[in-house]
Amino acid sequence: MPRNRSGRRVIQSAIDIKRWQQQPPTVIEARPARCPPCGAASCPLAGAIQGHGKRERQVWGPVSPDQPPEAIAVTARRRYHCVDCGAMLLVVPRCLLGRRVYSAAAISFALALWGVALATAAEVRQRVGPARILGPGSLF
Ligand SMILES: [Zn+2]
Image (cartoon, rainbow, N blue to C red; front, side, top):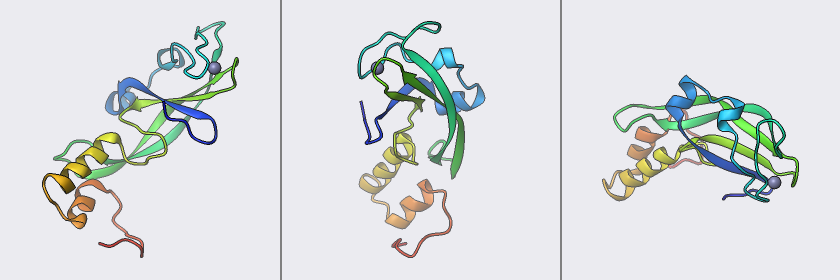
């Protein structure tokens, strides 16, 4: 389970990004069964894990390999707070990674283009990255 310096933990839901966008899960549907750090059981009414709001997050990359890359706003990333240990838990759609703007599928696709299809960096950027304005530090 990845953990960052702020003490937040990212939990991937079984729901993929497309379904998450079409029908965001309710607080009860997305609630983890237990707290990963301390193992406290979750219960909708009197459990140790309480809903703590939702946040919006961008996800970059193509929806499928034959589609152009885009930046998608996932509007309902669920947050939970464990009363027992104080951990902040973030439940995200499957394929969303902590501290990464690209989805896991987009990263895998880029690595396949680079390593298997032997595409150049510019070709990989064009197929995977939605940004059209590049900074001065970029090579292509
Ligand atoms: Zn806990």
